[in-house]
Image (cartoon, rainbow, N blue to C red; front, side):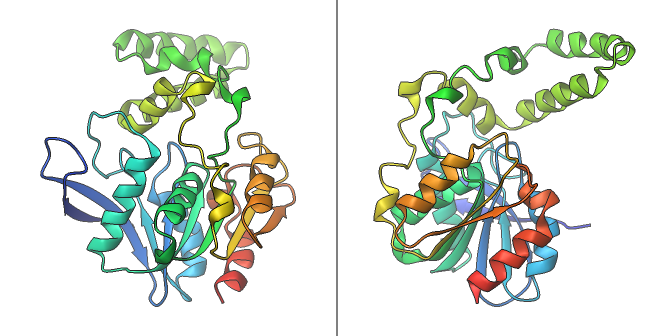
Length: 273
C-alpha cells in the first residue's frame, strides 16, 4: 500500500485561507522528477511507472490542486493556480530545479510551469499533453453536463438505469458514466474546468502561442490510438518547442501511465540520462 505524504503550504494562493494541503507520493532517490497526472486522475496513476523509474531517479507524484488528496477549495480553477500550487510544493520540498513529466492535463500544467519558471525545469516530458486550443472540444461533453448537477436525482437515475442497461448490453457504458459522476463530485477542479470552458473564447490559458519560447530539452510522447487528445496536439508541441522530439507508441491509447508504463520508461530513461 502506497501512502501519500501531506504538505501544509502556507501562502495567499487561496483567498481567505492561510494554508492548504498538498498530497504526493515519493519513490526513489537522486535527481527529482515531478509527475503531474491527467484530468480526473491523481498521483496513484503513476505507480506502474514509478516502479520502473525509482531505481534511477527520485519520483514525486503530486495530486494537483482540486484533485486527489490535495486541497479542494471552492474556487474557479485555472492553469495559473495550478502552476502557483506546483511552485509552492517544489519550494516546500526544497527542490530548486527538476525534470517534469506531465500526462494530459498535467502536461498542460507542466508546459505552463516551464514557461513561468524556465530556470527551474531541467527537462520536460509531455505524455499526450492537453493545453492546445481546439474549438472542436467545445460542446463535445454537453451531454454529460447533468452529471455536474449536485442532486441525488442524478444518482437515482443512474441506479435505475443499471439493470435496464444490463438487459440491453449497455451496462459497461452506464458503469463508466457512474464512475465519471463519482469522480466529478469529489474533484472540484474537474467540475470547474468543464463548467467554465463551454465556449471557444473561454480557452484563454492554452499554451500554443507561447511554447516557442521554451528552451528546455523536451520529449513529447503519445499513442497512435489516443481518442482523447488528438495526435496533432502532440505534434504542435513537438513542432513549436525548439529541438523537441516526438515519440509515438504504436497501439497505445490515452491511458499512457496506467497501461503503457514499460513503453514510457523505455523512452524516459534515455532522455533523463
